[in-house]
Amino acid sequence: MSSAKPQLTLYNTLTRAKAPFTPMDAGNVRLYACGPTVYDFAHIGNGRAAIVFDLLFRVLRHVYGAGHVTYVRNITDVDDKINARALRDHPQLPLNEAIRKVTETTAAQYQQDVAALFCLEPSVQPRATDNIEQMQRLIAALIARGHAYQADGEVLFAVESMPDYGQLSGRNLADNLAGARIAVDAHKRNPADFVLWKLSSAEEPGWDSPWGRGRPGWHIECSAMSERYLGQTFDIHGGGLDLIFPHHENEIAQSRCAHGTHAMANVWMHNGFLQVEGQKMSKSLGNFFTIHQLLETTDFGGRKWPGEVLRLAMLMTHYREPIDFTVKRLEEAVTLLERWERAAGDAEPAASLAPGLVERLADDLDSPGAIGRIHALIVDEGRVADGLALAGLMGIQIQRQVSVDMDVAARIATRLDALNAKDFAKADAIRAELAEQGIALMDYKDEEGQRRTKWEVKR
Ligand code: AMP
Ligand code: ZN
Image 1 (tube, helix red, strand yellow):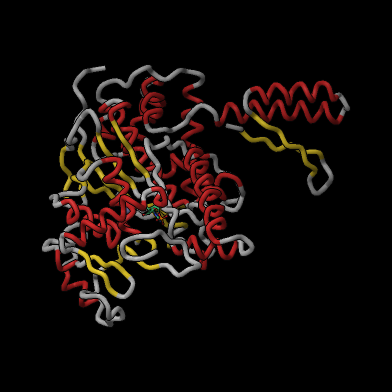
Image 2 (cartoon, rainbow, N blue to C red):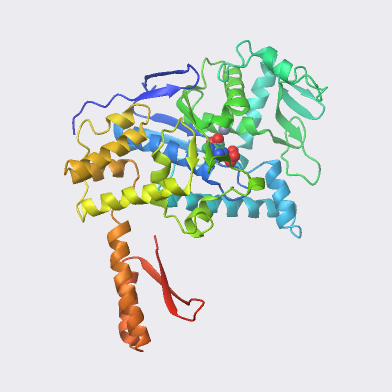
């Protein structure tokens, strides 16, 4: 491998321009991405955000060395939606226990789902409830510096105390005022002021604080957790487009005003939205799908979709573009993987990535360009080892799909013949042999009472 690092170029929402990326400390490149609020299964839009920032994490590790990147993705485990879910699902339990049940189950499911999408584990996955003290410290600093005030059982951030509030989203306070003309919140000095802390009733979860027993607002969580693990100013902050305003705008306001800094993060990156079959994904339209559903059920397009297909289908679109998630697109991803698989046979990936191959990814994560490159290397140029190495860098798993499919199908047929001939020893031997390769068989009878077998790859 050449010793010169490839130069990364990233689009920065804050400056609305693409620019060469220079970390503050090449020995510890620091990335924060807003993670899930854990009250329900993550949907495939959340899956997109996880994959996009996982790709960035992988590229940063490639450029700066795996030991020189810190990636923090938080878990929001205090939220009124969580409380509502806890009351609904576990009415018999004390609220605290019910909440813990909801958040622990959901967080574990999230980890499984994103692992199935080949996302690496972030360096740190802090939970909001483990960082209440840090949040309180930030709030106290904001009050002390004249950026926050108490009113009506809340501590609020005073947006007018920050002259350049609104830089990230490009909204100024006059716009906000115009948009919020029906001032429902009479206790706010400015309608755009937002909650840092709010009092909890006896039944609601709460922590003691100088401002009474209460709970944090959402935005302060990320300011506290990013400071704790990455410092007052760090390199890159990411999330979906929907988070630019108000979430990220308010994170910036809190962090910069509490610390008196010029920047919370130097680069702000946002992934585009995902829609399904041409429409915004929503429960009422019946086109809302969880990652789990696509992996484990046949609800979308009548078949299960393995994680590598979902991941490739996502990465076929540049992260800043919207994605229209369709059955057709997933089928295209399957076809691509099958082509690559056939061409690659059982070749091994190159031990290191040839210089130049990371070029597309280094250009603001041009994953469609990189996928085109993989295709050319494997299918057209006969550089299979290089193509596999580039796919490996992107977390795209090839070499399982087709030949496994055909092979397994043949052996399942042999085994069914053996079963029908009551040669159970032979049938069991085939089952055991496949199990050794991580393939599990499930026998069932179809509507006509015919013996059939399903199979799946166990990880
Ligand atoms: P949430 O749990 O809703 O706060 O979302 C977690 C992450 O997923 C955030 O970065 C969101 O911006 C992102 N996200 C939510 N919905 C979508 C969507 N439909 N498409 C892409 N990203 C999304
Ligand atoms: Zn956040």
